[in-house]
Image (cartoon, rainbow, N blue to C red; front, side):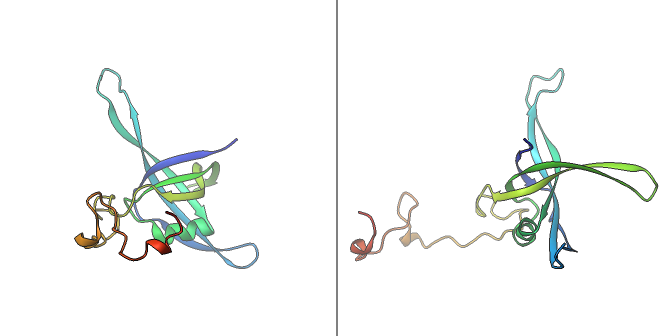
Length: 153
């Protein structure tokens, strides 16, 4: 089985290109790199050191279109996919080996507001609801007179 699950942040905005599909339609291809935290111990050091692995991801079709529309540098996402290896010969005649995660599913891990209030994520924070509509526990108050219309009691 070839299954990968990653949680990390985009290191930069996705690189999006369109290619001609097999049936003649345009196929969206989005490439991006995820910085995935790695915790471990370095030799001789008793403190946990946090480092990151930078993992290349590629989304085709709908996954690529989703990345183009919604993903920005700093966005924290969860990616599910599979590892794919390949190779090509560069312009100097040297063989280059590649390893990418082919994205099958991607979802946001944190809300726009918890993503550092828009710092470095490409998001703009949304205005907070008016204080009178939010209760003491952070939930919106149910307006008066609609209790009979609720599908649950």
